[in-house]
Every structure is written in structure tokens, then in C-alpha cells.
Length: 321
Image (cartoon, rainbow, N blue to C red; front, top):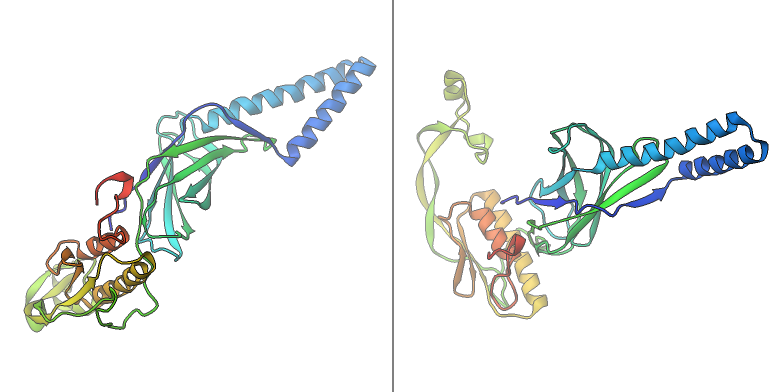
């Protein structure tokens, strides 16, 4: 899956200011000290009043310095499926700051789904990434994202915040159907298997090659790995294998196409785990074939952006799918 990030840019002033519970007590004490100083004329009370007012001004200056120049970047940390818990990688960047940012909290709304991420400290000129869970409500490109960056620094008397907004580039895959693992007939847009053939790994070993992340552990060639000092896997001869086929009959009513897309997503995930070749079609249009590079991401992206009339919706950021 292409994990396309989007940046949330701080548009600048105005700021919002919220008085915390501690801040309310501090303001009440300040008003009381001021009233006592005026009534008694005591210089020590005037000194205490001036110190309290100075702390309020200092708090405003330091909090503004803390959130200025801060930006947020969001991407999917793993494949995101609708109606299932997914992972967001939220990165706070301070590349334009000469001093670190402290006590930051970022409140995001990703397509209406709220998410709060806290950053105790972000080094100057650097970034910090947090991974949080969220549950997207629907498949497709995320169309709305907004949020706010806030800080309680330095005395937690006031919370200063500023709105952030940016260009969206996130894609949510369909929710796999409940019937995952079952082959169904091609009725009303349901998936079906074809009878074509394609190559798949056979029992005969032809040689060894470097290990790739997608290679199963059972294919590791232990002797070659020990001899060369790096992971090597067995390279097998190709043999003929039937190609499974997922065909969606379009156009179709929205409820039916959503059920069909969900079942097709479940079958694609199952066949990917089994290493089985397949092709995905919307009517007579080929969406993904057994020889395609990045077949898994291509098939799931096509299902995520498929509309009931058979056309592809705009992809992340409004780009064509």
C-alpha cells in the first residue's frame, strides 16, 4: 500500500486561549492581591501583584514561542480497513525552530474521526512520531482533515491553541466481508473463480536468492544463509496453477456493491496469504492481474475507490486513481 502522508499546516493567528483550573485559581489570587494592595497601600503586596502579572505575560510569550513554527504530518502506519482499528503515524516537526517545543498536544479529526496525540517534547530542527489507533468509518480516499495544536507550557495556567489544516492523502481499504475464506458464485456482483492458469512456485529447487520481506520462513535456505552470513531463500521452479477470478457486476445499487466489494476484499486478502494468482475485474474492465507489480496494493486500492456505476473515484488528494 502506498502510505501517502498529508501535512497539517498552521495558518497563523488568531489563537485561542483557555484558562485551566489552576489558572482560574491563580487569577483569583491575583485579583485578591491587587485588591488588598489598593486598600492597604502595602508595597510588598504591590510587588506580589506585579510578579503575578509578569508571570501571566511570560506565560503568553512562552506559549506562543512554543507553538509557532510547528507542523504536523500524518500517514497510515499500516493498511487501514474501514470499520476496523487502524494505525496512524502522527509526526510533529519543528524544522524551522531554534528551540525545542514542549508540552504539545495535537487534536485531529480524520474524516470526522477524532484522535488526540501528545508530544511532551520535540527537539529543535527535528521531529517526533507517535503511533495511535483510530477506526475509519468508510472506504475510499479521506476527504476531510483538520485539527488544532495546543500547549500548556510553561505553567499550565492557560492552554493556547491554533488551528491546523492541510491537504489529504490517505486511503482506506474496504472492510473485509464476514465470509472471508469462502468462494462464492458470481451472482449479483459476488466474486467467483476462473479456470485460467498462471505460474506459481513448484516443488523443485532451482537455486537460492536474497531474502525479501514477503518471503515465508519455510523457504529460508539455512545452509546457504549460514555460509554467506545473510538470509537466503530457496528459488523454486514454476508450475502451472489456476488463476482465481473476482468479477464485480456493475453498475449495481450502493448496498449491493458495498457487500460485493467487501467480499472481494476478503478473497483478495485470503489469496494473497496463500500466494495464489488471481485477477480482479469490474465488469469487463481489468483492475488487477496476476502478473501486476504491487498486485495487493493495486487490487485493494481499486476496491477502495470503486463507485457503484463502475467508475473510479478520485484518489488521495483529489488525484485520479
